[in-house]
Amino acid sequence: MEWIVMAIIWGGLMLYFIIPFHENADKHQHKITIKQAVISSFKRVTGQKKTILAVSFLLLTYLAIWYYAKDLAWYNQAHGVTAAADPAGKVPIYLAGVTIYALLLYLTVVGRQALLYMRAEG
Image (cartoon, rainbow, N blue to C red):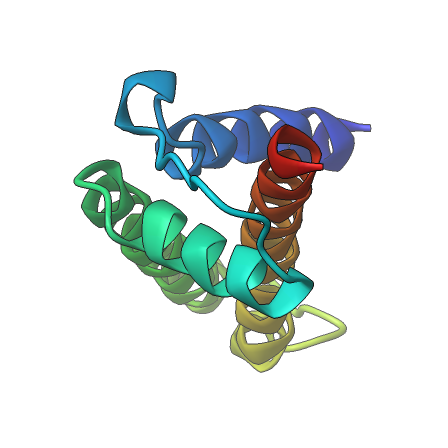
């Protein structure tokens, strides 16, 4: 249950950093194709200043996962706990999961932005 709550909170913060403000909207005067809408959406979402915060947040998450596994391994060794699985062995799985989740959020925002461009023009 705590993983679901953390995913919702983390995803909400990541969405806040990724979604562009409305004042920076691009105005297209002519009808645009899907390809042009997606390219324009990628530029708009990626080219904003808040994207730096999103990447920083992602890097801090990577560091937190790595330190958590490192400290758990140290704790188990220092206190003589015999763990069934090595905590460091799950780090690549956690990092891959966070990366996939962040990419899904990013691509969702880009797709939504492209649809908004298409609706505004159509």
